Image 1 (cartoon, rainbow, N blue to C red):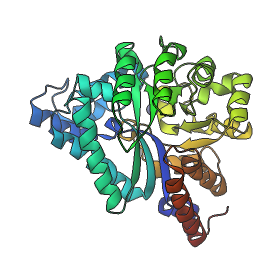
Image 2: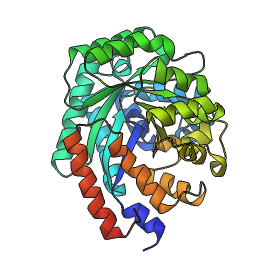
Image 3: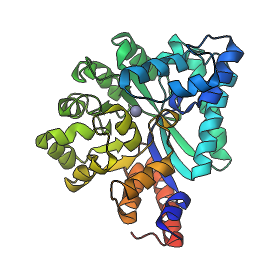
Length: 341
Ligand SMILES: [Zn+2]
């Protein structure tokens, strides 16, 4: 078995993936037609062209357009089923998925209904063999402060069995992390750990704020921490894991060459990282491809990739018993596949 065959076969974790961002152009095209929603394109081919992301502004516009096409419970079920099928195809056993309550209140079927439908479908998938999925409810920064207050109130009012954290998504430019602290404090008081996007399209200062002001336990991306040695040290000393997405970063950040991606410097500095796809159809990728790129272009060995994979469980936010059970399952698979520890 080659290393790439082992990567494809091994059980995997993915902890930085937006559920809405898994919707393929084909699914979106059918959904918009079904719901009578006009898209800014006249053919599926044109829509596929629109999916090719070149910058964050274009990306966020398409992303919001996509959210506005989810209009029925069946649309949400279809989105979850597509995600589950992708996990099964790639042997992704544990996922933490970002799913924004605010956008579905604003554009979709309402946050309560959206979470009920998504939770039920994910639980059914887990009961019938997996993947095991947990949810992170992000504040979309572009709609702050309304989105911050809404998300905190949503978390305070609910005890959804799959929600494991509050997060912060959306654009970084013009949206420093520190002003979101009151919402993160409310979430923590309500019992939720916190994570935050930072250091993707803005610099290391946002990573510092996410750690010090928001108390984030994990950072989505965090790659621009390498631009400030002190921030890199902060992440390493506090063992804050960064959920890296190579293809997403190559499309939306200045780190366009994966051979020069900061992931190697982060690892060398002792910062724990995971690998994910973020929004796979927008970046023409899936998790197997991300691991392959990490191996072939970023130069990470199979043993390093295995540790990165386990970090999804070690730094994951599901309950310890579940993560421990999966760690044992992963260890058995590593032995069977002959992957070096
Ligand atoms: Zn993300």
